[in-house]
Length: 163
Image (cartoon, rainbow, N blue to C red):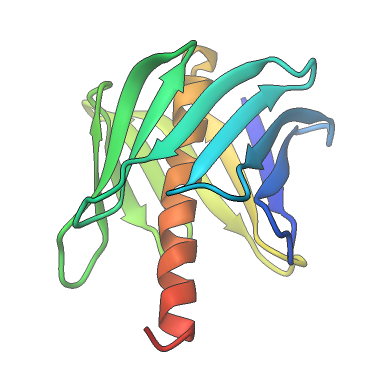
């Protein structure tokens, strides 16, 4: 399944859609404006919540939980590293490999590619192409990709503000 995410620029609360390869909206991602920690909701186009993402507070490094129907299905944590960002995924036995800063990476499980992520260049705002190999993994893989993007965006914002 090919999906495309184009985040809206200057949005007060995170809100963006995921499109399919025909350009049709497939999912709506909406953030909670006033909350402790990041909270994101993923809805299908009928308005049904298909995934909830919540940042775990009071952690040294960014850690997020993914929930489907109120059940935690995965935890994504940024690992401590000096040169190259690394992420741990608890739940499915997935690993994330590649260049996060360039948005060119893969989610793999025992050598099998679950999803390919690549940045679309020369677009207004951030746009990403997601190729998820198995539809049964689509929602959780989408959540992992959104979390990695959140962590990168918050680190860039902190660096640009001089913090």
